[in-house]
Length: 339
Image (cartoon, rainbow, N blue to C red; front, top):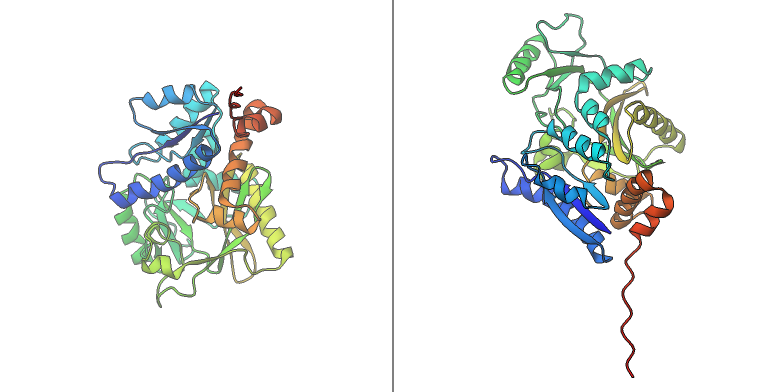
């Protein structure tokens, strides 16, 4: 089987650590397919469209591309091109990637489906005086916690105004959302399987720091936010409560037309009510990331997680039998008999 692992090689302002973070999953996934004898090609996505030629010849595109030159919105166009060409690919479709990244649109759809979302508004002019505080201020059309830092949560009107002003200088649209104090859970979904839940333990965060997952917490290993936000998987909660959160996450995933694999982030307030924070298609697939951690809690090793994601994409495109035949390790030719 010919497998293309698609990725964003980065922008000029990316550091060596940024590039290494992307290539970790690319190389690990390429190795998984290569070890069992499949032909694997690592293909960077650039605007010249040369990447598409390789994809057209592939039996499967394992899509790790989260943008082009670091611009997240181009991810949708990459996925849409694969969809239009009928190339089997892993991950969510273009509608889902585009809609989930546009947080105001996603919130509106989730609310219309009757699902609980913290009160929110786009920062266009004056914020209503009755808007609840504290609130979190973040980019309205980015992912991977871009633009979220220790100052993102504000507790008074003056700080809210200042934070909005600072954010609008960097981002086209800014979302203001009610901050929900309480416990935070991640629900991973692969195909039609909901994985064991994880909880983020914020007990080691420095005093006076808001317990949120910032950009540093996710991507800067060894930072205060990273060390202070420890994932616990499986979450130490009752099965009944886990089932309740799983059903909510599954409803959110269906509403956003999710497929292949994803993660839903939920906060549970002090009264025990769960609130959907975000629906994340195509979350980080490194072996140390949350989805892999949840898969291990389900009894899958990293290779099994990747295989299941690949099988799901091939099954959707070509049927169950074809998917299994393509994923099977190529048979080696028999050595010729000697006299």
